[in-house]
Length: 139
Image (cartoon, rainbow, N blue to C red; front, top):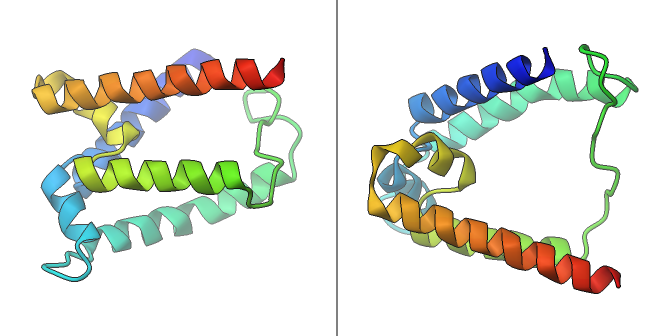
């Protein structure tokens, strides 16, 4: 049941990204171009997503198990550090250059655009490098 729920949540998430325009690199880049032809519509999408998530997140913080009975896994760390800021900056640079982030990239991967395939390969390479550095750091 957990895998089916995760699959359905992923489908819903992907459809939401497509409907909101988050999978359109030109729309994302127009949102990021605050000094030019700025398109604020994605700010409304983000504000709406935050508003919808506030209630379930507050509920989840008070639970030890999910509705399906799995352990609740919420981030425990609440401080800013160099790793978080560095990762955020790296993510922002990638988002600003490509006009796409990981969720929408997965949602449009099967379109066959070579740019998305290159983006996904670069993202996977970055994840591999991070994993290797983390393993090295823990030893």
